[in-house]
Amino acid sequence: MAKNKPKNNQSGDGTKTIALNRKARHEYIFEEFFQCGIVLMGTEVKSLRAGRVNLGEAYAQVEKGEVWLKNMQISHWETGNRFNHEPFRSRKLLLHAKEIRRLIGKTKEKGLTLVPTRLYFCRGYVKVEIALARGKKMYDKREAEAAKSAKRAIDRAIKSFNR
Image (cartoon, rainbow, N blue to C red):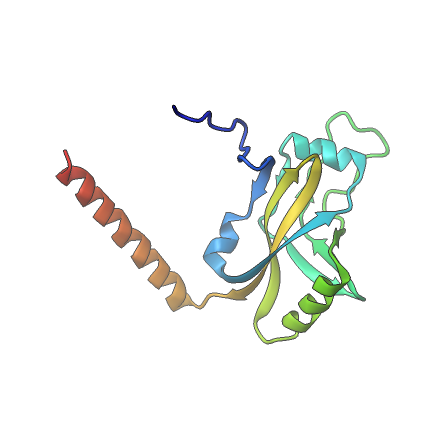
């Protein structure tokens, strides 16, 4: 008996993906992932439920013992009034103190940065998945693209062989 597939980008564990940062997969090598909460205003949550968010140029930064998400665009809520939010404001990320201390130590290393990879709802709360990442060199990008096209060619050959 086949299982029902989740609807609306929902996975089996009760999470619903709002936005993915696909560009980050191409630009960075991920070393470690962290799940964290985010401090939002009411109109921001309503815009997120409508899917009006852009993670493309966003990054996270540790400042004075707190982690901040910068340059993430959450569009204005259409029916918002004078209490509507600022689209590009800095938003505080919620992590345990131990995790923040670890991130402070890791980001001091040369070449490591914090990149948001996914924004999602988990049991009614908005969560952000950030990755400790190292930037890819041009030859790494070419190598990844070559491996991807080789895998595509192999899959195509297997598919035509099985017909």
